Image (tube, rainbow, N blue to C red; front, side, top):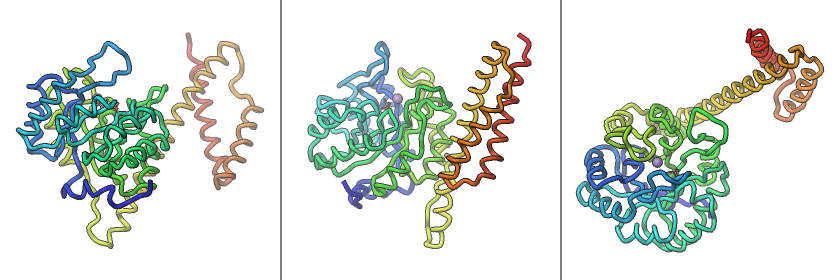
Amino acid sequence: MKNKKELRTWLDDMQLTHPLVIAGPCSAETEEQLLKIAHQLKNTDATVLRAGIWKPRTRPGNFEGVGEKGLQWLQKAKVETGMMTATEVANPAHVELALKYDVDMLWLGARTTVSPFIVQEIADALKGTDKIVLVKNPVNPDLPLWLGAVERLYASNIKKLGAIHRGFSTYEKSKYRNNPEWQIPIDLQNRFPDLPLICDPSHIAGRRNLVFDICQTALDLNFNGFMVETHYDPENAWSDAKQQITVDTLVQMMIDLKVRKKQHASEDYLFELNKLRAKIDVLDDKLLGLLGNRMKVADSIGSLKKDNNVSILQTSRWNEILGKMILQGEDKSLSEEFILKIYKAIHQESINHQKKIINKID
Ligand code: PEP
Ligand code: MN
């Protein structure tokens, strides 16, 4: 697949004056719930109503979705509000039903994109459709797998395509439910600048108070829109209760977000600068995360040394690290002077951490 202008015509045709907003509950729960949320969203920036009908749960025993009847509610919401509708499809049977109830946008979930077999089955079931099909990134940080799913759909003559970034699963705890790894959607955008790219801040965040900042970063990185989980009673939602926001919050968020639009050619420079600054912010965030993790390991080393009565400073080990880093730095065009400065500072902080542990009275 090559980048093609036609990839974004469906979005251009919407003629939106703001980023695309797909909003609605994680799951359709009851007819009243879905219709109430749809009516709340009706006169907002949200163009598309989302609702999960079949819920892929990591562990069994959680709410697994209402099934086909939810599609009837979605269709009713479409008739009553004029909004477009969207739901997740995870196999050909879902596709058949979603088409039967005239769902406008179908998305492949993160647990589906990981499997080329299932993606191919869905692509076959959707062959030639003029529905919009969005592909969430796979749960693991693997760009070719994400692209491969988009390509399978494109090869099935589906031309209204888009990608949704929902973050990547990690074993290590982080402040996010799914790590954004922004470099991956940035790489995707560089390869396919005309493929609409939508951010799902809800599944990245896992907590509603992080949703706004993630949306702002996505806008700064030139994303085309959002898919945001919204509910009138988020705390009591049947799935993903911690990350859903109210429609009022969504409306306020759309007011507060800064959309950096390029209006004149002379603004090219500022537009580019903002994009690059957003990339720097993403890297700084990562850098601090890594330093924090490094110090946690230093704490564990401190405990081990304490238990075994070993002194903090092990000169040979320190010289070994420094030599290795100077060599690696050279490969990355980082001067020896810089590596020495930065590693001395890191080493000092590490010693301070270990000292604190060793001097702690049990
Ligand atoms: C969802 O959108 O509710 C969902 C299950 O998302 P994901 O596939 O990103 O986990
Ligand atoms: Mn969800």
